[in-house]
Amino acid sequence: MSSFADQTFTPPELIRNFCIIAHIDHGKSTLADRMLQLTGVVEERAMRAQYLDRMDIERERGITIKAQNVRLPWQVDGQNHVLHLIDTPGHVDFTYEVSRALEACEGAILLVDAAQGIEAQTLANLYLALEKDLTIIPVLNKIDLPAADPDRYAAEIAHIVGCEPGDVLRVSAKTGLGVRELLDEVVRLVPAPVGDADAPARAMIFDSVYDTYRGVVTYIRVVDGKITPRERIKMMSTGTTHELLEVGIVSPDPKPSAGLGVGEVGYLITGVKDVRQSKVGDTVTSQRGGATEPLTGYREPRPMVYSGLYPVDGSEYPDLREALDKLQLNDAALTYEPETSAALGFGFRCGFLGLLHLEITRDRLEREAGLDLISTAPNVVYRVIKDDGTEMTVTNPSDWPTGKVAQVFEPVVKVTVLAPSEFIGTIMELCQGRRGQLGGMDYLSESRVELRYTMPLAEIIFDFFDALKSRTRGYASLDYEEAGEQEADLVKVDIMLQGEPVDAFSAIRHKDDAYSYGTAMTTKLRELIPRQQFEVPIQAAIGSRIIARENIRAIRKDVLAKCYGGDITRKRKLLEKQKEGKKRMKTIGRVEVPQEAFVAALSTDSAGDAKSGKK
Image (cartoon, rainbow, N blue to C red; front, side):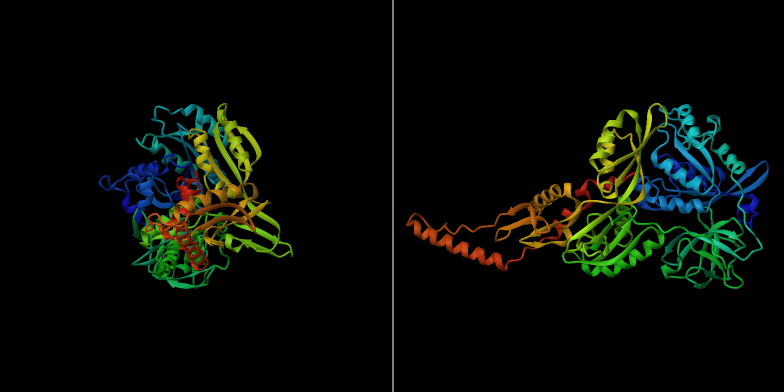
């Protein structure tokens, strides 16, 4: 079998490209583990759980962040086949990874937990796969659990996919039951890749990583022609040419090969160190006699949430830029641009697909580059039309126009919530409290309901998911997708220390929510900022109108300590003298906000524990 895996140019009719899609925690990585063991590409002694999850952070959290591809040999009726499996993430923030994986496949295994049934992200990933016309193989996993109810959920899947309940395969990824039959079904049902072997080479870049020693490693799926080592290739979007140093397959570790033919998935190394020259979605072709028409790439992902990332030590700014460059190669959905803050110094304004994406990115930058970072409170992008008709985009509260504002538009999202039907009332109450509008409601079965809402993105990115989970005892699942924008009554809330606005604490809030944000922030800062020699007022203001205020009391020296008895006028004179000194101090004194106060006030935890992310 292994000699077959190393053989050059497998005929396309013997290749099957497929991926596994599911909601988070429904067993994708465990199923991939069993496939690696069954096909023999990983020896028993080298096997470990979640084998394809390479990052420490993935293993610690038990979630997949990066899609991973692997080549598996499989024999059906005495005929050797090559299976290319891509294990995808299940989390809504990594949907872009899933959409890119689907481009490289002809089939998808739709995996559903037999104890939980279909959840919101299962549906979202299913619709993505159907848009790409992939062959769907519905599979129920975890049938060995005591709580499993395979018959009920098989009927639910059949209703959505449009097949018979008997067609839904039943497996247990943990014990390996039914996995052999599943691989046979993949060979039987998934169509072979189609391409012209004699045409000029065309291959789609669907992922890339940075290797410190070898430079950029690019993962490709060949559509037409063939790619062989030592030839010169051209990247069609940038027009750059490189010599191919190595071409190979991943099974599950990189193995050099004599080339890749139609339908094959593998990697190529050019030795290039410049991370910008390998763009996800680009088409690779031969420099001589290459293709003229590029493949249709991926649509650029649009960031949903913006947050500033600043190094705690200002001298680490160049290191942060380099780390972001390398991370962007590995994570095509990350965008960033430089920005400065009066309080925090130099940093970057980064765009993310969601809060978990923000948190994972920050975690990876701190681990992989050894940086110490502060992230500002996340916010979304607003479109502001001023009184004179000029239009501007605001990604940061400090960019908010000072003059009169005619209209403000905020991004909205279509939210899908799946939950047991007994929680309908409490979910509706939550969504309406977050300015949501009900778009529709469907019963998937007698006990499960799907609610569709249109809601402002700003209302979701903080603690919406946590509130939803706590109100439904953890049974609800959430998915959302962008749905344009709507006009809203938004204001900028400034936080002022001694009459001076501090840009890092400013926020854009809905008019009804501005007062509660102002009081919460002033109260928190009163506790965090140390007392000064003079009294410091902390105020929250909308324009010139103060909406909340707290005072930090002055530290006073007891000037009367040395007066034992005696005339009251003497004491009064000393107190008046102290009062004059405090007044003068107040006019020339500056309030120093310690770094810890910024970190505590701006941490995403304070805005509702963002750490748990959304599913």
